[in-house]
Image (cartoon, rainbow, N blue to C red; front, side, top):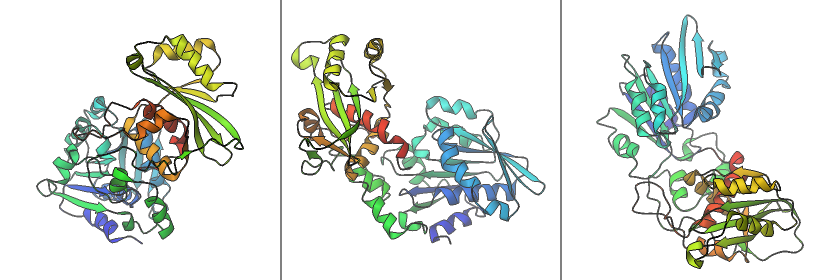
Length: 404
């Protein structure tokens, strides 16, 4: 059974529109139905023709689009044969005497547009289009030069100054594009219990975007869900910690912040202790060896799983490796993704801060969005403990993160 909004996607395939734009809340039933109808439309109208399926990366496109698509029972029932070639990232679809080719691309940065240059396409499906550079998207659209070609866009909301919102969603009529705005209630497969769970995961700008489906400015505190009454706890001598990690944001003149994290026997990760030093404020620069000594002191006699370090801190990473005591992991520096994932863990109570960690507690009250920016960026001030926490969260929780 399809919802009314999903039925509108089915109707688009035979309409006179040149483009379909589906935006809105997470888990609202956009991607699965769009990808299925995209294939059906292509097979009904073309043969021996090329198409593009684009995600933020090839891996995310395969994970979020192709695997669920190929698992659908619809294809066998109606005589379709789907074969994916890993070597050339191509999904070959055959029905009867018709065969079409769906090439998978990743639009992760400004250089990605070169990957799709030179192709001739009859259609392109752009998943998570708001996360792609404009140059890549426009190059993909320019490749669609075959008569009857169509554009298929899918995304969750971002900043209202985002180029895709201003150039496509606000101008959908003049671009002859059908715009469908989805909420989670448009997905008939979600139970009331699951809807309630998702609503409890977010707050602030992420609630407005991913639950309410609104294109809104990121403003105010980055982590408004931080609450001293619930997030900050007293040290508990009876708690047993099974694993430990240390996260490091490294600076020379700027502050350096190290956080010691322990996984409690209640399944919650606790920030147990921290080290914080600002060369600018103290008028004393520390050497890499002095920072390493602080790292060892923070670890004590605990068995540390890994030390997660900002990859730009090359000399400090070399210093840690030279001593041979700790395993080093390069931190992910995807700022917006890291903030979003950290917000979810705070909202869900999966990370707690002990009350002796004064520097991170202070930064929670100061860390704000840059409201003058057209992108989602926090103000680069009072952010060093915030950064080391984000590195820890991305290393620890990224594999179990919700797909956006």
